[in-house]
Amino acid sequence: MSKKFAIFGNPVSHSKSPNMHNDAFRFIGCDAVYKKHLLNDGESIAKEFLKHGYSGANITVPFKEIAFKKADEVRGIGLKIKAVNTYINEDGKIIAYNTDAPGFLKAIQDFKDVKNVLILGAGGTAKAASIALYEVGKSVYVLNRSKEKLSFFEAWDIKCYSHDDFEISDFDLVVNATSAGLDNDDLPFIKENLEPVLKNAKYAYDCIYGKMTPFLKLAQKNGCEIKDGTDMLLYQGVLAFELFVGKRADEELIGIMRRALEKV
Ligand code: NDP
Image (cartoon, rainbow, N blue to C red; front, top):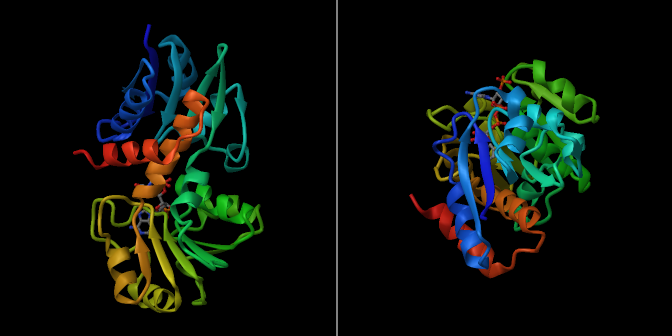
């Protein structure tokens, strides 16, 4: 019988994860199927995972935090982020991981000599990127529109700003981890303050993928090397796939997964 995998989310119809994982399973000759699983009630995530006999799953918006709480065991950096995007069924026990954080680090690996990073946003993606960078010794600063979500970062001794109290300073890399620009033309921060920051930065990364966002356009105009979120999506998937099959993905397999993401 085929092994079953899924992505839990709401909405989930837009997800490209099934393309990526089904092509990868086919490529390595593994009899498995990966489907979209629309979940209405996050509280039921663990029960649904086990009831459907899934061997593994990914978790997307808005269930990463509840998935953390409902797992039997969390391993790795997910313990620090308190949110997970991957479940593995180990003999009926749910073992959870966060592959967004290491996926983000892989995505920015070509950005050299980065010491100071400004993260825009304070949601789940900002937490994954910030803790990943903090853990590899970068100086991390977080700027969010509102103050409410900053306490998580302050507990890590990360310098935090809200839009009202930001001090313009020098950063090597600026990361847009907000949803500004996702389905609108918003910048994540007022242009008057963002532009001087980008002018002094070397690199700009937008976690939003497949789109030249207003943030990336402004960064490019101000001389930054830019990159969108496609590689973060790819590498969180590659790292989850490695957990699904218990094997390292080689470059050929990563190429298959990358091409699967490019399919409409
Ligand atoms: P959350 O809903 O958890 O957080 C959204 C954040 O964006 C909040 O900090 C919010 O600020 C801020 N925000 C929203 N709109 C604006 C705006 N107009 N101006 C300034 N700030 C704004 O979202 P996620 O962390 O889950 O996702 C963030 C982004 O990352 C999304 O665009 C998503 O598509 C992308 N993403 C990419 C992935 C990849 O693999 N490449 C993986 C996961 C997400 P406030 O607190 O004030 O509301």
